[in-house]
Length: 148
Image (cartoon, rainbow, N blue to C red; front, side):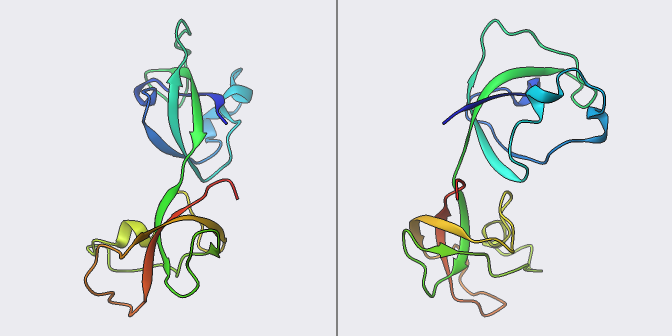
């Protein structure tokens, strides 16, 4: 289900994904607050449509202003513990990983997912892209459902 919101004009392109981080200091006193601050904090979204004939509004946070767009929450690709990971089950991330050069790092610490929260697994994608986990974790790459 899509939601209409305002985002920076440079991001206002169908297919653009972003993680909504909530209110910034520059938002105080803005007349468009209710249209901008209507998403769930720390959730990943994808722009599905840009409202045509909508004007670009001035914004203290976005140098090129903001535009009206439609967004939808999207799944997050992540590595979770392999044990008990199957479509429909719930899982959480294993925890932080200091190995930032690892090809799996972006999936072990994905944007839009909290370490202390469980998410429903929508799909099993298979083995993670790394050959060896330096923390000796047995992981499975999955799509986590953002709506849970």
